[in-house]
Image 1 (tube, rainbow, N blue to C red):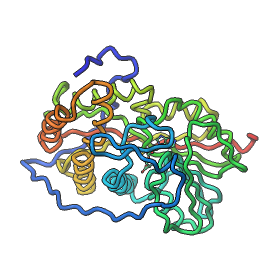
Image 2: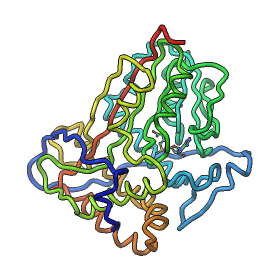
Image 3: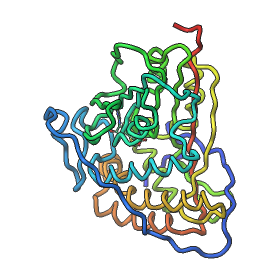
Length: 338
Ligand SMILES: C[S@@+](CC[C@H](N)C(=O)[O-])C[C@H]1O[C@@H](n2cnc3c(N)ncnc32)[C@H](O)[C@@H]1O
């Protein structure tokens, strides 16, 4: 593992938030289901001429700029992540007070489009546009939901402004967040809202046996280091509030939500969230690691698999009481702005 302790691109530790642990040993329940997906067809080959590496499929548009696969198993993980976040955000799709009849909504880096589709169902008044580097969204969607292939870091050219802009889980996706926030400000209507929800990718524990330099800690550190070597921001979560304020938004709210890994919390809701988060990591750690550890650390796929078996042991170890933080930040464009 590379020494990243001096790497300025890897921020120092997360803000700890205590979760009370259940007493005694716990089993890991892996009996959680997955979702079927239908995929977009008839698109230009520059978009769908996907790349294959180490048995996983990657985006073709802006080839090489994003490290996670876009295949069916990653889509399943993203849909599970959506479920985890819905539970963690008390069943709400957003925390910004957008009212009962929002108009134009943009979802940056929409992934499988599951959030945009749920918003379309919830708000028939809204027109929702989701963009992404990959065209992995279903074709059967509510009539008020549309998807387009786009790089959110390009100059935005929308014909009119949005009432609400949403951007969730783009850790490791973007190079220039302040510029993204400036574009979001420009394309939000006066009085409209933006909401950014993202990770602090550092694991920690407030009462368990999780230790620095454990396999799980080394894995997270290696992932963050690799992402920053790609020139991308690994942990946008803790910086969102500052960026949103710097862009000019007001009425800014910031919540730090701890997410447990595994069923160790005493609280019933956090226990359920932890169970799903564990599955998300057990399924996703290969996807998260492959491009980064082969390209940046120069590891072979076999070396990665051996390392990941230790990481999975740590993930399943409820005595570690590992958790990580998720940040929800929303703000409003002043009514007096242009
Ligand atoms: C981790 S996923 C999150 C998906 C979705 N926002 C969610 O919360 O379920 C990140 C998504 O951002 C997309 N992405 C990465 N870089 C992007 C960019 N520069 N412009 C648009 N989408 C991008 C990826 O293709 C991927 O679908």
